[in-house]
Structures are given as C-alpha cells and as structure tokens.
Amino acid sequence: MSVHRNVKKVTTHVLQEMKDAGEKITMLTGYDFSMARIIDTAGIDVILVGDSASNVMAGHETTLPITLDQMIYHASSVVRAVDRALVVVDMPFGSYQGNSKEALSSAIRIMKESGGHAVKMEGGQEILESISRILTAGIPVMGHLGLTPQSIYKFGTYVVRAKEEEEAERLISDAKALEEVGCFAIVLEKIPAELAAKVAKEVHIPIIGIGAGNGVDGQVLVVHDMLGINNEFNPRFLRKYHNLYQEMLGSFHRYIEDVKSGDFPNEEESY
Ligand code: KIV
Image (cartoon, rainbow, N blue to C red; front, side):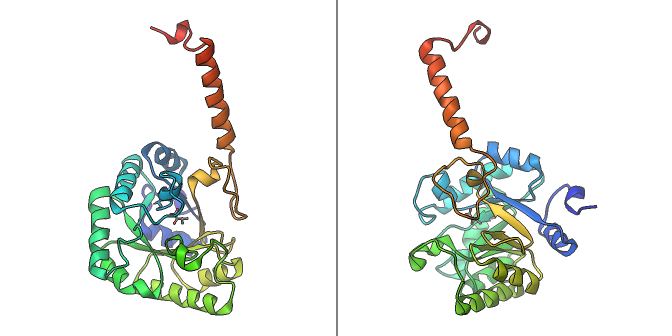
C-alpha cells in the first residue's frame, strides 16, 4: 500500500517515508485559491508557492522583482484552499541573501502571515548560516540547486547547469551540505539526469526534479506550463497535459460572438 494514499495531511516526515518506500513525490506550483483547490483535490503531495509567480502571475521577465509581501499574498490564498498538501513557499530574491537575521525574519513573516508549512531557498554552502538559523526557529527548509533562477544574471542564460565536472562536484557537495544542515528536501533544476540520480542516491532526503530526469524521488512543474496556458514556453523537460491556451482562446472567442450576436444571455439565463 502506498504511503501517499493513507495520508490525511502531507508533512515533511511523510515525504521522507515516501522516499524510503521508493514512492515518487508529486509537486506542482500554485499561486491562487481556485487553482490550489483543484490541485489539492487531485491529491498532489506538495504545492510550491513558487517565485515563478513573478513570471506567470505578474508578467515579469525574471523571478527577481516579486516581493515578500506579494509572496505572502499568494501563499495565504493557497493555504486557504488546501486540506492535504504540504505548502512550501519560496523565499523571494532579496529576502534572505543579506544576512541570517534578515533571512530568519523573512521566513518568520512567511510562516506567520501566510500559514505556509515550509520555505524554499535557492543556494548551497553560501546560505548555510541562514538555513541553520531558520531551522533553529522550527521552520522546515527545502533547498534548491542547479539552475537557480534568482541568479539568472550571474548565469546569463537558462541553459542546463552542472554539465562540467567542477560544477557537478560543487552541486554534489552543496546537496550533502544542505542535507547535513537539516533541509527536508531539495529541488534540482535543469541538470543532467545522471548527476541528479547520483545526488538522489547519495543523499537521504527527498530530491525533487524539474528538468533533472527520472532518477530522482519526485517531480515538480509550474502548473501554468503543464496545463499549456503559456504557449511560448516549450523546454524539452516540459510535458504539457493540456493546451489550455487554445481552449481558453476558443472559449473567449465564442463568448465574444455570443454577446455581440445577442445570443447570450438567452431566456433561461435571465431572471
Ligand atoms: O518558482 C518556482 O516555480 C520553482 C520551481 C521551478 C521549482 O522554484
């Protein structure tokens, strides 16, 4: 019997049990009440209130502009919708890189004001002090390595990371450091599948991949991408489960026609 089916509420401990039992973990992003309700009802294990909200909700080119207040707004909407999933909230750019005290107060604001269950932070050894301080306050932390979009201006492009040995070695040691400091899971974004599988084998905490192949403990996608809402984003790692862009466009066209022609509302739709 799967761990996942028996669980009323997913916790960080449940995720560890899933990894230990060899059961894959499902994770999707969510930013608003209505979508989060559907995602939770479907039985997704983890909802990530990602700072990708900066792109898909606010239309920014990068994740950098989104603020702590905006993340808290999105996260509190998701938390109100969710009965079962673990809600992890991204700490936005600028809310934790300064120093560990600032990082802790940002994490406390997220937990207090949104009701989220955990935070996620991008980076390895350079943010260990901040992670440690946040963990000491009893706040679970998910790590994020590989392509870390908050550092896009350092990388210069969104291409696959850690293809060279030096960066791959650094990623493995970062993952081990995140495990050692006490992170409950790590997201690995856009790295070679073989490297991701090696990390998942060598660290004991759950490894959730996005563009990191099938040898990890679970998968995450941005919900707007997997539903095909944005038809301009087509990376190789993305499986689209719908073409909502076309479906929605069709519905909006039909609505325009119906209103313009006077067909809507009809008698049954009127009081
Ligand atoms: O912000 C986000 O959506 C993320 C996922 C891509 C993992 O960090």
